[in-house]
Amino acid sequence: MESFLASIGQYMFHLFGLMAVGGALALVFSKNAIHSIVGFLLAMLAVAGCYLCLSAEFIAVAQLLVYAGGIVVLFLFVVMLVEMTKYKEKGLFQVQTGWAVGAVLAGAVAIISVFWRTWFGPNATVALTLPPDLARGLDVGHQNAEAVSRGIFAQYLLPFEILSVILLVALVGAVVLAKTERV
Amino acid sequence: MNDAASMNSVLFISFLLFSVGVAGVLIRRNVLIILMCVELMLNAANLNLVAFARHSGTVAGQAFALLVMGLAAAEVTIGLALVVALYRKKDTIQVDQINLLKG
Image 1 (tube, rainbow over the protein chains, first blue to last red):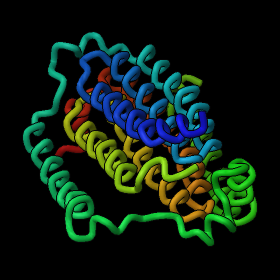
Image 2 (tube, each protein chain N blue to C red):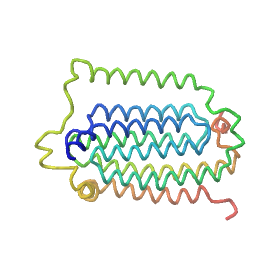
Image 3 (cartoon, each protein chain N blue to C red):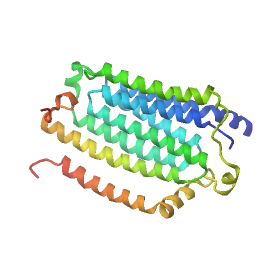
């Protein structure tokens, strides 16, 4: 059983990654906004699976809670508030779509050439691996929530507090922006 | 657990997600789709952070991935409030019809 799990563990990341990319493509290229949200949900669930494969269990569960539980529902509420059916016939894409796709493809070719060199070039055998002394000293995989909480509440306390202030500002700002004029 | 996914494949999946997000921001007219594509790009960056946290054996990448997640939630809240306010004012959410700043 252990060897079976270890053997499929190599392929689970690629499976989840391809699911994420497929969901992202469905998000960009579907006509209906609800279908786009379903593609977004699929991409977020697949990214949570990728986190599980990278032995970040706490981040995976937080991803499920925040994205699949909160943000997708928020997007659904806004689609319900904003009636979009009357714009369906006006065209899906911008006028500069050709230029934009060309620019993105040019950047993609540039980065893919870098990937190509690291996979097939003379440096292809140099892989980024875990140094063994670090792996014994600080194991991120085991007791993941404890390690993350030590990181957040002890080592990086100041960014966490700044984030809490930003969340308060976002809360007040959302209320001010979305309230009606009469109140 | 042994090496479940090599660094190259993680970086490549993250790169694919990011480029799909950039393409969606550039080519779609709907503000909601553009916001979702921004979220997609943040997730690609998060995937990189978690992968580097695993491969360096420290917890900093995972901690900052969690902080980025909270920041993304704040950002989408403000963005959706702006969308609702814009829809009340202009009666549309197509970005090519919102051209009040055009000179």
